[in-house]
Length: 148
Image (cartoon, rainbow, N blue to C red; front, side):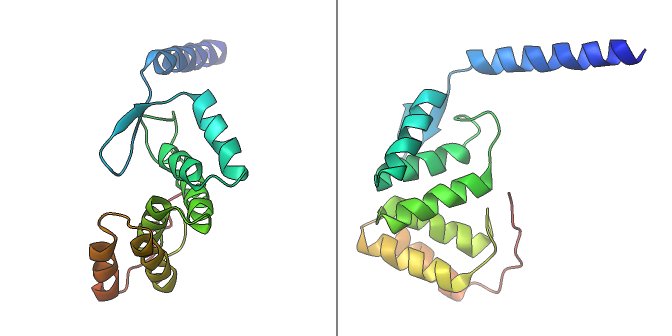
């Protein structure tokens, strides 16, 4: 009985992995564009991020939070790459990081860091950053969700 259960679980996982591998992977960016992605491309962006490319950091951060781009989303990884992108002065990454701080997604709620990140996003011309900053400044204290 135990061996049959293990075999069933193993076959189910194998079929799930096969069906995911056949699925067309896409990544939606904040500007509304959708691009095709692969794990190799995400790995390349990750390497480029480590070399100082803020746009690559932003794309990896988006990928980790998009179930169409990766098999399992990981909000902490998304937060980590958005933080790197913002440190490299990418406006879109700063915008997303500000939202993560304001809502406690992948990190704890931190209103001061949310404001600082959104102010950087405004300086870099990220669309919607001013509106988001006003929301953060006027929101009631948020209990941290700390979604990982």
